[in-house]
Image (cartoon, rainbow, N blue to C red; front, side, top):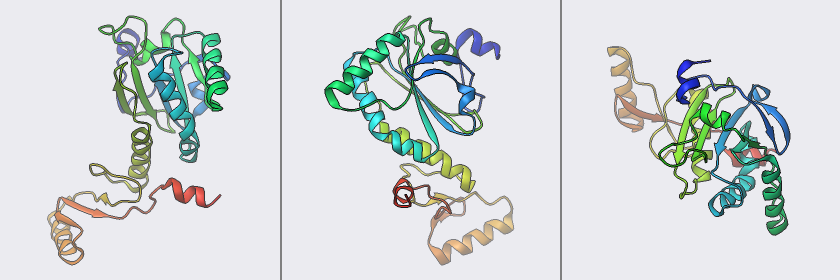
Length: 231
């Protein structure tokens, strides 16, 4: 294991996600079990708390969209598995919504500290609201951190997952505020001849502002609505 992770829990984008074995509301799991799938690993401060409850309901309602993108949700807090079970049952009884993904009971905080989910300046025990998007090769691709008093924007997490997947499949970058099926940024020319050719394309197609910033439609826009229509 990386020494920095072991001591500080300082995981980084581009690094292999630390593996773990965990007890969850859906039985024992290992991160290694999810190879070949994308994973959205997220932490919450505590069960039976208002902000966390709204997040769990929102994640549950969008779970199918994540699944359509070959992604699995995994929640985590330092509460016990019994507490998790009682909480998700309470949500089910009061709303009719079942939590369709596992919630890790990280009682000793081992996983939370390994991933840097605990901010000692905020709490020595409770996790803040971290999100890690891990790709199908177990590489950390995105990290988001929200404070305890601000709930996450689940559509933004979903959009970020789609952006990463479309970027990978098209070998391109994504512009600000990109949403699925909108134009993507073409790779910049690497030679003067390519630069001249790109400028000619811009003059013809009006698909950018200069040779270093031009756009094209993605070959695979990874649009959730299209996937649902095929079912």
